[in-house]
Image (cartoon, rainbow, N blue to C red; front, top):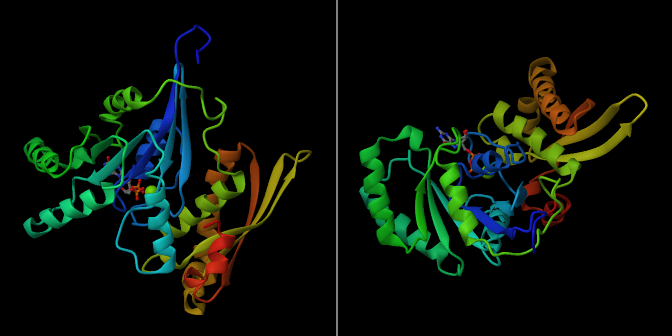
Length: 305
Ligand SMILES: Nc1nc2c(ncn2[C@@H]2O[C@H](COP(=O)(O)OP(=O)(O)O)[C@@H](O)[C@H]2O)c(=O)[nH]1
Ligand SMILES: [Mg+2]
């Protein structure tokens, strides 16, 4: 398979996995040079596998951003971990990402190593350990960490980066490219993701709920797009969406005094949705309760799990 100027194309899939909050989605957006995956300071922001397609002359990398690997007990969380583990198969390379700014107590070092090795046991493709958030760590500590991790697992490479500031991402990209086979692009060159506009819009709204509400509310919320209507004459898209909560008592928190919280969620979401769709948007949000939806297999199916 050749490019226009007869150079071979490298094309393949790379899964990004690791514990919650390591910066996986931030890295995906950085490599895409575009925001596709939502990012918040809270763990378990990403719930599905999000596909991001990096296109350049001579290569296409299909990135799989995944939910964080963690010990999951609840059905939703188990689904999330299953999605992340499934993405490890059939890819050309795996990025295992950790947050180096987190203190690793001695007693945890061994356990963490075993946990990581356990996750990676079934992986047949090369694994690159990405040490993220190096902007928060001093160099000496970083060297010790690299040494400790290289004892744990035969990583193909260990690469320190700052996904937020874009440091080290070029080296990572170069390393990934070497692992990709020569072959045809999997996707057309002009699309950054396979996700639907509806899905991306629901994710943006969920991101604002995560950012603007506290305690357990983010983890108890899901977003359903109820209608999505384009009016080409007015150049306006009207979107109706429901924020679905698990309990009646959470409604007040999301709506806020005089509806102010819901209003600010709506304003923040609309801005990002307009950027995404490159059109004016009228966004109508409301809040619904579906008791314990995260335990409800049928509802999880509705959400696309
Ligand atoms: N300081 C710093 N923060 C980062 C970096 N990468 C990600 N973050 C932050 O870490 C948090 C979690 O990021 P996210 O991409 O959602 O992590 P994920 O759960 O692994 O997808 C967010 O607040 C990011 O802004 C980094 O390189 N440096
Ligand atoms: Mg994420």
